Length: 85
Image (cartoon, rainbow, N blue to C red; front, side):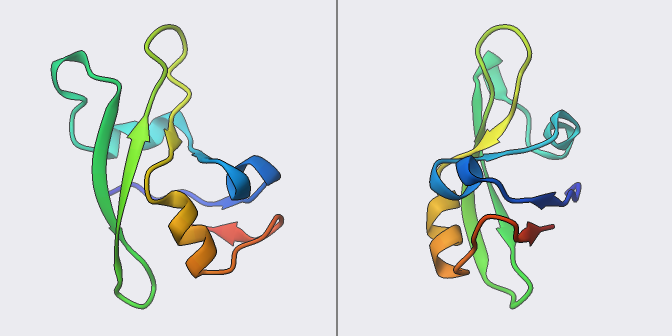
């Protein structure tokens, strides 16, 4: 899976994590023209997290991680200005 890093902003902490478009190529295919895909990621302690990445149905994809993201934020006590990678 591709890696990226990001300094978190308010929206990343309160709603969803926007990710680089290049990250999409490392996820399972968006089958049947769908606009969302579920995937798993492992944190530094070995815990597996389930997430969903979705894109806009039209225009620029603008991928975001939503499902599972806020649970991750709360579990890690992340705040604005923290860096994830």
